Length: 66
Image (cartoon, rainbow, N blue to C red; front, side):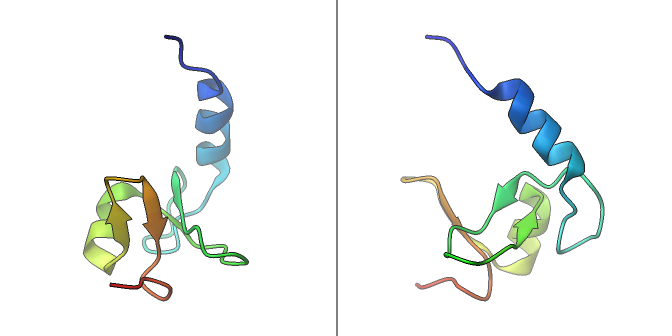
C-alpha cells in the first residue's frame, strides 16, 4: 500500500496552532461538528481529550463522551 495525502497533512499541521500550548504543528482535530479545536498528541493527553484508538476518533475535552 501507499500513503497518500501525507504532504498535505504535514502542510496543514505546520499552519495549525495548538489550542493547548499555542505552538504550531497541531495535527489532531476534534471531530465534533463545528468544533475548531486542534492539538498535538502530547497536549491532547494532558488536556483530557478522548483519543479512541480503535476507531481513530479524537474528541476534545469539551465534547468528549465517556
